[in-house]
Amino acid sequence: MLFHNAYVFTPDGFVYGGFTVEDGRFGEVFAGDRTGGADLGGAYVIPGLVDIHTHGAAGADFSDGDAEGLRRMAAHLAKCGVTSFAPTSMTLPYDTLAAAFQTAVDVRENRPAGCARVMGIHMEGPYFSEKKKGAQNGAYLKLPDLDGFRRLWEGCGGLVRIVDVAPELEGAVSFTEGAKELCTVSVAHTDADYDAAKAVYAAGASHLTHLYNAMPPIHHRKPGVIGAASERDDVIAELICDGLHVHPGAVRMAFKLFPGRICLISDSLRCCGMPDGEYELGGQQVFLSGGVARLADGTIAGAASDLYQDLRNAISFGIDRDEAIRAATIRPAREIGCEAEIGSIEAGKRADFVVCGVDLEREAVYIGGERV
Image: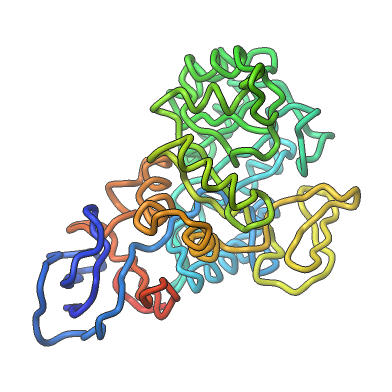
């Protein structure tokens, strides 16, 4: 199938031209125009988005351990232009996590048409600080446990691609040294000081979960986790751009503090795509009102927006368009070790792409070359 007459987002930026799709993958990506096939009428084409931190959507939550719910979530994300994702767990008992992880394996192996691809699992918790647990359930917090994590990782065939840890916890350094051999290790939900965070990054952590949220702020005498992460060129920082979790000014600051190292995420909950009301998150009640999801005590939980909306938000906040696209496509793909399959429009990769207008208003979504 030939797609032409479009501005295609390549690794070098937008190029006027088109591409072919063969057996669900990109074939030739070319500059200039051709005839025949699908004339895209001068539209803009970007890679399908990759969300590596999303708990739920459309009334479903990954931690429910319900395969049908995960498929419903995957279908909703696909319609939003998110063509690949890493469903993200909450702080819960190991047996609950193991059951949820198995649903990810099932849906990955039996992906229905029109659903986003499950490309990994993000294990957010339970190795967190009580002080910075945020919307995580404190009843299930644990110290870092490499043997327990390894059993979970092996139980899902290594599908866990990111695991989170708070650096100040006993055993965090040795946990990181072992876990980095299995997947990306991320710092999260932490009250760690600069030295503790630096030690875990030196041990092999290379990711920072939802920058600014559930961690100490930057202080000129206490640079903390953010300061330690910003100094390392190998650390990628996640950022929520729903306009609620992080102020637009702090979004702009993040892209300057971590140049070329920001990864946009949604951190979406089951209330994403749903009306205001009462929902559940990790055994706790969440109340969605006016687009803001909070626990009963007023703590902001996850988000109610999807990654495509966040991408457009980032651009509206003043982030360079091309950089924002990379932060929502190829960069997250690299963080879960899938950059050879997804994340950019290149020959041989999965033909997952979004056709949109000049302001990236979404017009059509394709997965494997088939329109959703």
